[in-house]
Length: 401
Image 1 (cartoon, helix red, strand yellow):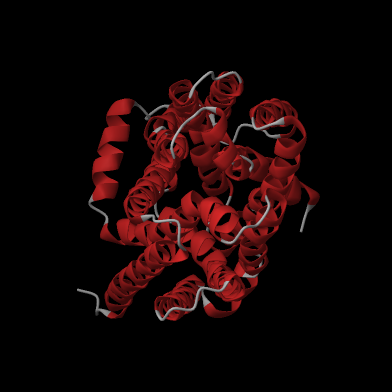
Image 2: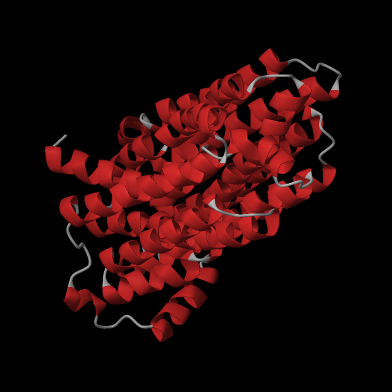
């Protein structure tokens, strides 16, 4: 692996991690934010949900802009908006102000989600793209390991507002790295035909591409299962199981370790078995484990160790699903990579936000509604994989006209 390849992965991974860092570092603070701002659980969860929504739907705009003006300018603008939102969140006097500034912060984070995937497609396709994507996810996935641990320490020492000052500083660092370590990957001549008109046409074309939508939805429901876990886990592990914020952070990080470890096998497994077979085996394992977890919890077994062990295995399988489906979905759309990446990201977050919102309705402080939501997302992801990959196999085997 060349130093240049590694450097690009590190920079793109850090840019992608800014948004998730502002989520994962914030999770241990949810109960204390509610107490400090005199807000109920639903209002505090709304500050998380609004961030997801704005980060997801902001990609619809920033993706095509990156096709029109290049990749770096939207990243600079997004980081600047993220920092404004971070400062506002740190100084919020009530839950309404916090929700408003989290919305701005999410819009800024949308650039870091959409543009790096387009840069990967600018540079590589096929298994090389899968290797870069999995390496990018290695850096990206450091966030759910380190961010909750760091966040809990900051919260215990300085209070929850210090979390937002910290993520604002991380965005400033990412801006410096963007300026010094990443070249523009969208040449001027390739931008000539790009406009909002072509973006709309591109979105219309992609929304009619069943293979693209199927692959995006497979990953989307996988990510949604993690969103359900994100929105409920701090209340369940801290309030229901009685863990401290620091110990909660350790349990939260365990799933990220599984996700990271397995995602790094993507390139090797894709070389040996092909991307589509890796997706199928991984999504089957993921759904099987999550359904087993639901069956055990529904039978009356309310044990943290059992839940943690099965989530670890299930999210390990998910670590193979996300990079492979992303590469396959982008494979045929290099000329509109920014637009395709934006639609992918928006659909991922829309599905995740919907799942998170529905799970919030049924939340009762116990693990079962959360586990049921996770298992349902896994089953839907499996069903979509069966339909999408089966359709692709039939098309490949069909005789030429």
